Length: 207
Image (cartoon, rainbow, N blue to C red; front, side):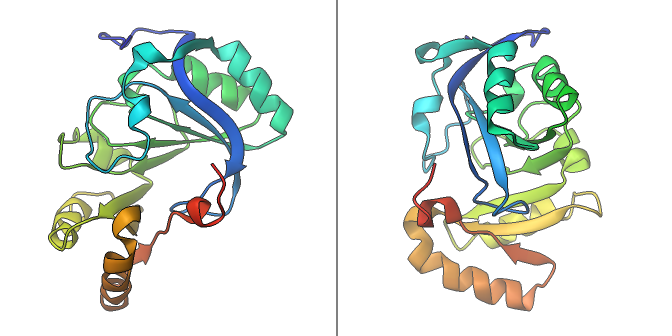
């Protein structure tokens, strides 16, 4: 069930949550607890967690339950992802994580305004639904998935709108990595403001 007015809530539809290693982007290689919220209306054709789209198919869990599990991991870093996590009011979840000393990051398409004071905002825009303006202001990291040659120009269009401190990443779509990774490497060599992101968790065979 999507919270249509995104009111303050203490329970969220959760597809999964687990302790792992962040595999992508700026914090790649860092131990992280992942909380994957269910529910998404963006509809990326290459999404590798399509089972997260229907929130009604997943269990509702309380913030207290999630925090208990995060504490068990002894982590200092938590990634809130989806689905599309910004469909929900994340205030209680984020504040509860911060209260136990956990640095919080979010992975979002930027299609909805964020409700909650996140520490790190990973903005991964999609062609299937336009981002809101605030995504460009809040972005700590831009991560563009490359699955077609035109995506490089599309990525540059987003980069022009960002705040000056945002880190820029190009990431090959996993099933097309053999084709696009060499193109990304060449592009980054010629455009050093960008960095390469790889889904290293898939290489390590971890969630």
